[in-house]
Image (tube, rainbow, N blue to C red; front, side, top):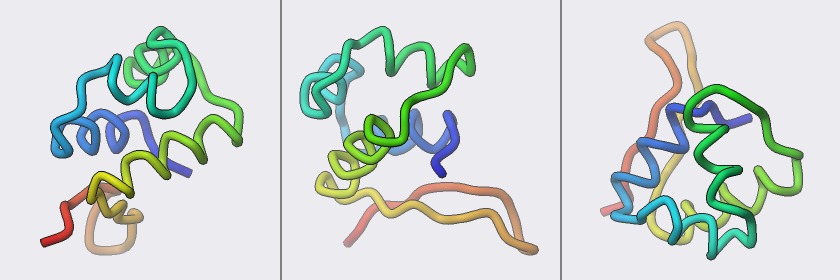
Length: 76
């Protein structure tokens, strides 16, 4: 599952504004804002759509492991 920081970093790295991501994922901008600010979760279907939009924009999500926390990077 994605963390709020991963969504915010991924969106920023992909050059997507908050409204752009919300529109592409078919959700209200307030849904993205609440999640990124840690004030609410997202249903799994919504999270899947957000992840798909960001991955299509070139974002790769990195899971936390023994070496460090969860993060993002962009495809070359």
